[in-house]
Amino acid sequence: MKKILSLILLSIVISFYSCGNKKTNKQPEQITIETNPEVKKEAPKNVEVSPEQTALIKKGQQLFKDKTCITCHLTDTKVVGPSVKDISRIYKEKDADIVAFLKSESDPIVDTNPGQVTIMKANLDSFVKNLKDDELQAIKAYMMSVK
Ligand code: HEC
Image (cartoon, rainbow, N blue to C red; front, side, top):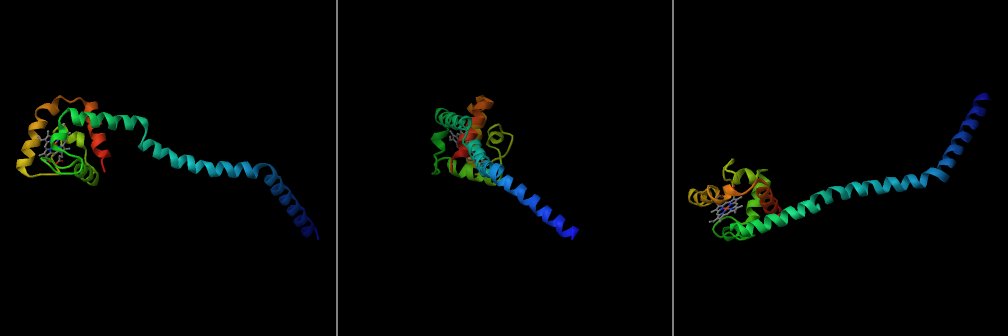
């Protein structure tokens, strides 16, 4: 008998609490739970196309023209050098660093034909050497943004 009484008491207590929750807490709680993942989802997207990144890509695209890279590298057609699209794809696949290549710290991986390498090497040993670190980073950001 005591058991039954305490069980009844317990269920009353439980229903009282859950009722209280429904009235006060449940709704605001659900709203915060629902909005949080959305905020989290948006955050990485914003990181990818942050204003800083967009500005860097723009700067790189301008340098790519100003420094004559564009005369040998068109966006998606091979002319003298490989297209920017191909370079970007291969550097992504191999997880390689364009800045390292431009600083002559890593070997070519896109076109290893010796005649072709000599042409680009002539650039690396001349005007590319005068590019500052932030300019190289911008060029890399632009080239890697081309899909
Ligand atoms: C006179 C033509 C010419 C100009 C100008 C030129 N390139 Fe190249 N570039 C080439 C050729 C040819 C290759 C292919 C050989 C090679 O991959 O090393 C190449 C290859 C590359 C590669 C791929 C390297 C790899 O891993 O194979 C990158 C990155 C690159 N160039 C960036 C640039 C940038 C940035 C500029 C401007 C600062 C530039 N190039 C200017 C001809 C040129």
